[in-house]
View 1 (tube, rainbow, N blue to C red):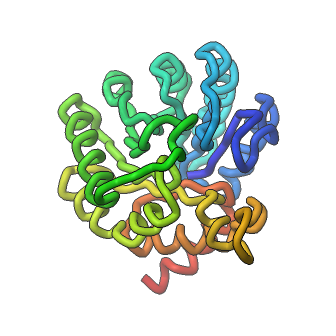
View 2 (cartoon, helix red, strand yellow):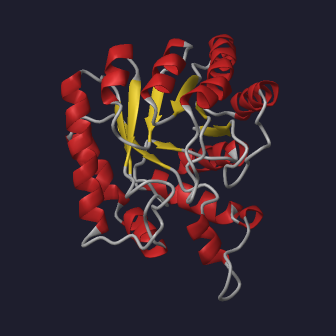
Length: 266
């Protein structure tokens, strides 16, 4: 899943693809690099991000989804377009414009996906982007995340969603230790997802702050985004080895190369 942020303020690529033309060109580049899904988002969910209005998000997302859905149909590989939103109005419009998957960090829009006959990704997030990193605490992060996601998946399946993915929400209301624990126990979540009838587990670690903390040469600020490629690729490989069905990434070409190198050995 290739990340396409049509935003001015996303933590990694905010402002780079904030116009329709730039975003569509980037989406086509991601397809050419080997992405199976292009995930279009019009509202940043980085820690501390403020919400945008429905109208602003619609203006950012719908023209891009429309154009990329058309490009995907002519690509010949079965590339899909997904929409990354928590707003039902945006989800409905983007699915009508050609998106086939709803990537929902709020884990609440399963009825929208069911009505549209679309796939749905339920992600775990503690709190909201504006506050989620304000001292997140869990009694057992692995058990709590798994229980929440399986409960959401059951609701979606009962509502008629035919394709349900779950995402542990790395970096969303979690400390570095929480993130590492979730990755270490990812195999158990994969097994639970399969037992619950889910399509698979989606994992997103790409360029996230916890990788910067781990890559920092010493105490102080985390390593900048530009120095997180190795950690991104390592955690993505680990996720796939643990059985994840998809990884959400910024650097598509190198990730595709990694999966090709890993695949024959598997």
